[in-house]
Image 1 (cartoon, helix red, strand yellow):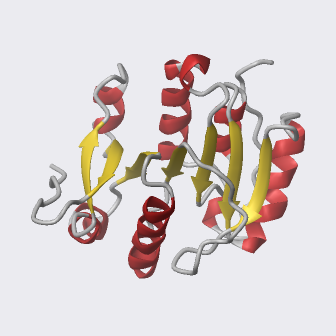
Image 2: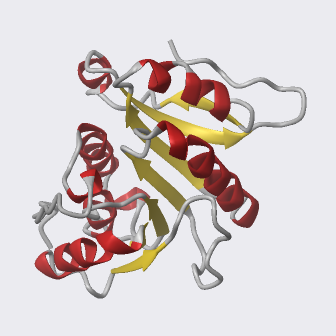
Length: 201
């Protein structure tokens, strides 16, 4: 199976219906990590939109659940079929801030890209990240986003560090390139009592 991902975009349901820089950065990073890191593992993608990141993971051998709000399900399902990964990728509605669906199954890696854009959704996103960590405490969290405006650079990190520590991924040779465009790729770990999160620079 080719690792190349074909994506159909549709912006009618909202901005999640197209691809954005952080999604491409995370997809490229997974590809560089290779199938040895993903084959047989179970991934869940938050705010998947088109499903780009999850489909990229599936092409490297992962079993993937791509999630987003209901209006984006047809886009994700179209791209799953377009890339012929129906046996590896399923789409499901998951709304941030609401209780997790009971049928998510096991999860080894949680992926999120370009999920930071609406200030009103910051706390809902972080609540869902916390819920996923509670449900899957051993899962790896890979979180990629572009700091487009002041609230992305200051408010979101200040809310996130109440619950999570993070470290920028250090094994990506393209890090200097996308960092200049204000894209950051992070490993998240749940904050322990009395330990403050690292601030983004």
